[in-house]
Image 1 (cartoon, one colour):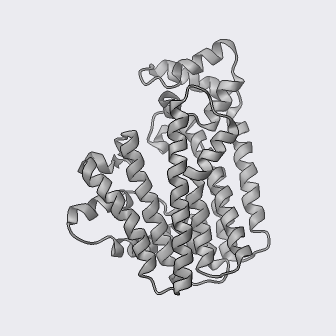
Image 2: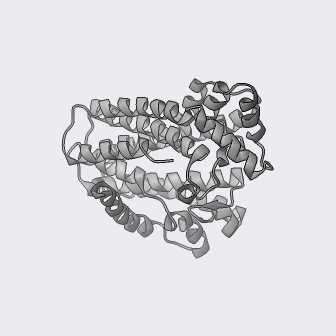
Image 3: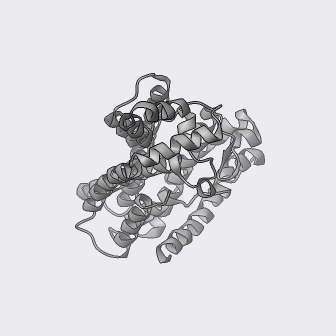
Length: 326
């Protein structure tokens, strides 16, 4: 509970900084840019930026521009992902393109992307630190775009991807922003390559563990928590690790039942529940949890030489990510 409060308090501070930067005219454009930020998000990535700075004895004020920038980039990806996937809801509210229209949503995403860089370059950090932050964030954005296309290609192909293909994809699409959050936090505190590399490794492995767990919740999560129907990812045909494992593990009629539900938006609730029940019976949750814990262990080892409350907060976040209930 104490750690959750720390994240919430951090979010309040980041929100104030964020909204001070997301102002301008036309007002509708900035309303669209801030729409998802206002209506949700735990600000995990900004939290990681700030704690990664503090673990190296850096100042929170020095990390705040990078923390806000990472959150802007994260929301930029959400806006554009929702357009590509034609999703109608996020955080329990209409997506940006559904509320404001596609043209304004695209521009809102572009504003978030541009403001992220402006927030860093307008900061009072040294020119060298600013340059390193911009370079690091640019590389992460490229990774996210590459990962998104890998995901699209994976969905289009008939073959089922290997686990290695899946990890490569989420390593770019999701983990890149976790990686850069920790790396940028470290850069705000030090120029030591080893420290930056350690925090970067923590973020990357945390990000992979996060997405693996998120995909597990997407298959069999409680709809009251996810705000999506149970088995939603199975019905949508997402080639996530839990689904890939289930399809490979199932035999005979059980496999037929899962494949009948996979990528079938018109499947009945009864048949979908039956498929999810089979996935549960195969012990997939335990297998997927083991994979998430493998990456969590790698993340924890990256921080083995550090100590203090900031390290404790990062480890607590790691534990929260991989032990989230379905």
